[in-house]
Image (cartoon, rainbow, N blue to C red; front, side, top):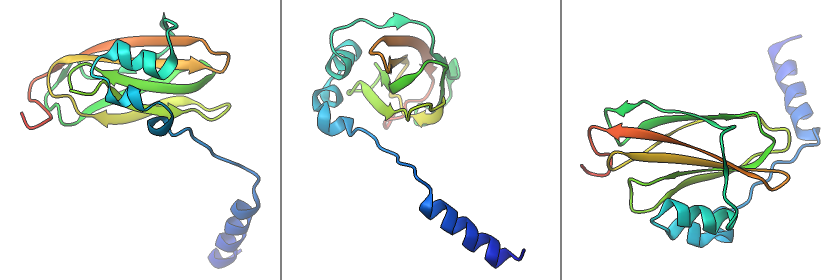
Length: 148
């Protein structure tokens, strides 16, 4: 089969596949979480007053970040999560990101975040049955990422 036919068949297959991706706009539905400067208050605004159980989520970051402007963060979990959120206590706003996890999705997310100074990253995941799980990880920042 030549390349042109292969690409045409692939495009048709993708166009007719029955799939749907959807995500919650947490900035619109939970705006106070994005305005909070305290991690605990931001978590409460996003997920309510239930306290998360420690564990079941793995966070990998460098122990010492040479540049706070670009800190690599990797999050993994085998839980059946519906959402997962990242918070930090080094910047004026605590909430960093909130992800909607697709059904049967694999949580193995990598990103880079900015931290103004040494602080703690907190990750909270909400399972499809409504339980909360969290983990924290301290990161020492040697050069500030927000103009420092």
